[in-house]
Amino acid sequence: MASRLPDPGPDERAHSDRLLQLLRTQIASQGPMPFAQYMERCLYAPGLGYYSAGKTKFGEGGDFVTAPELGGLFAQCVVTAVQPVMAMLGEEADFLELGGGSGAFAEAALRAFVQAGTLPHRYLILEPSADLRERQRERLAAALPAELNARVAWLDRPPEQAWRGVLFANEVVDALPTTRFTLRAGEAYEEHVALDGEGRLMRTDRPADALVAGAVRHLERDLGRPFDDGYRSEVLPQLPYWMQAVAGSLEAGVMLFVDYGYVRREYYLPERHDGTLMAHYRHHAHNDPLHWPGLNDLTASVDFTALAEAGNSAGFGVAAYLPQAQFLLASGLQQAFEQAHAQATDDFARHRLAQEVRRLTLPEQMGERFQAMLFARGLDVLPLDAELLAADQGGRL
Image (cartoon, rainbow, N blue to C red):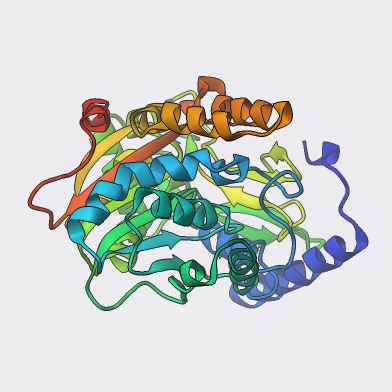
């Protein structure tokens, strides 16, 4: 598959070579690198990782398209869903977006909050990439009125002081550095990245440590069956710690995660014997994470059962779990589309709106592959729309 990918230009090759040299040096001095650490370096190494470098990632000119890049309907529906919570919590309620992408979601969401009459006290963006942060800052400064833009603030780390409001994450969990595991003679092994005799990256397996082995055994107990020898997949043993880190200070409010993935029994189907890890480069998906490190987005599907467990361990309850299409339809997608369609000035704009709805809702597009999970904590009542709560499929978890 890698041979059919577009060739990178000279600057991209040089960028990848610099990261490759960093990886080689670390592996040569410290030994084979756990795949999760390799993925972390490829995505987030300062100045070299995929999300740290000055290259367009999102939209038609990047490597993949996220829901906010399609238009404003997705953000409008998210705001419609959480606006009652913001209203109930009052004027001091904040909205925290994890990973702001291009800034498209923040721009559309702030406009939707204005229309709903429930502006957050602060619109916070937790963005680890300095490059993306600057792109977001420039976009919002150019697109929003000064008084609205003044509510936006960027964070280097999750809030340490207790706060109230809404935490939102779209396609964030899939980019957490994932552990790859396999089974040999019933024992758990962890995938590592090593160097072959010619200094090229290669994958190799080493006996899993207690944390990874424990995570694999937890999966087997919950599934009610052992993994077959040779079965390979992903697990996030650090997910409960990550959840506590990003959401532990949210004392009252809701969290909304939207991502692609499955409930556990579907994630670890026997026929899915090489996991879900994928690389994305210029709108091509492939399965070689060692190809041009630093130029590919590396992702793995989300085990939503694990996400629910992590939320529970951080003190939250699952309020709703449902496919993205049902979440959007229960959150006013039809009304938002009709309003935008009526305001469209030409046939091209109306066509784009129709295409946006199709991509957001069709099962073979984002409608079924993406899931929405809502958590709540510290609320006397849960002011979510009855249609949204009625569509809950939490029993599948």
